Image 1 (cartoon, rainbow, N blue to C red):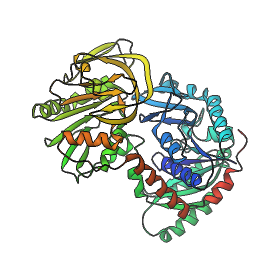
Image 2 (image 1 turned 30 degrees about the vertical axis):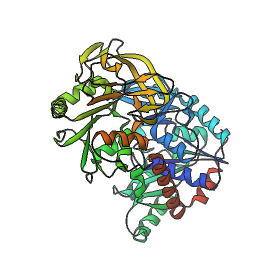
Image 3 (image 1 turned 60 degrees about the horizontal axis):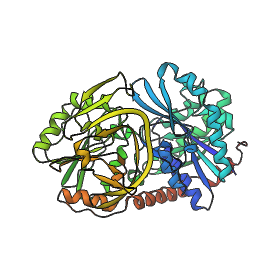
Image 4 (image 1 turned 45 degrees about the horizontal axis):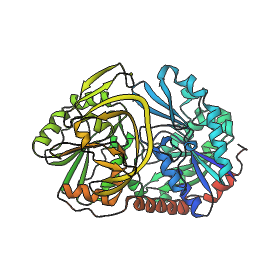
Length: 487
C-alpha cells in the first residue's frame, strides 16, 4: 500500500509512542505493517534476531506490529559516548565513532543505505510507518539530513507533523515549522496531529482551526494524554530528567542516574511490583539509607560514568550500603564498575589506561573492540529468564567462578561476591521474567506480584491503539500512505 512518516515539532513530542500505537492499530485491522526510523540517537537499544542492535523504540514498534525486530527498522543508530562523540551503528553493527565536527558530512553518505533498508521493508508489508528524529524545523541541520526531510523527499514519503500541546506553544510550534522550512520540504507535510491533550478537546477547537488556516495543513486529530505510556519501556534519558520514580512500595530499590546511563529500561519491570519503591536517583542527591538494593544500570561509557559516580559521592553511599548488609546488582556496564579494575588498552572509550573499580566484586574487566550482541536464555537464582547481551569487554576473576547466570548452552555469565550480597551480569532484560523478579524480591524479603511484563506492555499497546482509533482519522492516514512513491 505505501508509507507515512510522523515528524515532530521537537524532541520528546511523542512520535515514538504514536508510531507504536498506529502500528498496533493497523495490525489490529489485519494489515501487515512495519516500523522504520532512518536515524536514531539513543543509548537504549535492543538486540535483533538477525544479530544486530537497533533503538529500543523500534523494537517496541516491531512488537506493536507483532513482528520480529530487524536491523532494517533502524539502519543508523547513534549512541552518545561523550558530549561531542557518538558510536555509529549501521545495520546493527558498530562502524566507528562520529564527532560533532564530521557528523554532518558522514551521515549524508549513509542515505543510500537508509533507502535500501526502507525499500526492503516496503517489499515485506502493506504499510511502513516511519518516525522522524528531532524536528524538521532545525534548519541548521538540514544539509545532509537523513532523519527527517532528507529521507522523506528521497523516498517520497508523505509526512504528518506531531505537536505536543502539554509543553505549551503548540500553535506556534506547528505554524512556525511551516514558516521556517524550505517550501519543497513543506510540500511533503500533509497535516498535523496534536498530542498529549488534557481536558475537553472542544476547548481547543479554535486553536485547531487556526493551525489549519495558518499552516495550510489539515488536522488528523487530537490525541489525549495516554496513561498507558507509563507501562511502555523507556526510549531515552529524557524521561529521567522528569524525575521518574515510584514511592508507594515499602522496599526501596535505588538506581543512580549516571551521565551515559543506557538500557535503564531493564528496571521498568520493577514498576509492576507493588512491594517496590523504585527510585531513580538524580545527580546531587544521595542514595537513600533505607535502600534494600542498589542497581547500577548499563553505561555507554563505563569509565567516564564510574568517575561521575565517584564525583557525586555515590561510591561512598554504595560502600556504606554494602557494609550495612545491603545488596548490589550491576547490569552490563554497572557490572564492570563493581570489579577491582577496568582497563581500556584499545582506547575504546578514550585514552588508553585503567582505573580502579568499586572493588565489590573480585573481577577485572578489559574493554575490547569486539561487541557481544546476542539473545540469550538461561537461569539465575533458580528461575528462568530471556534477555540479550550487548557489551564490549570481557570480565574475569575469582568471583566469576560463582556465576550469577547460566545460559542454556552451558555458558556461565556474571559473578557473585563471596558474601552473596553483590552480583553482576551482562544480561539485559533479566527482570522482565516474573519468576526472575520473584527470586530477587525473595532475597530482599518481599513477595512479587507475578505479573507478566510482556503481557503488560502488549495490553498498553492495545490501549493506545484503541485511543488512536477513537481520536485520530486513521482512514485518512491510510489514504495518505498510498500516495508514497515506490521504494
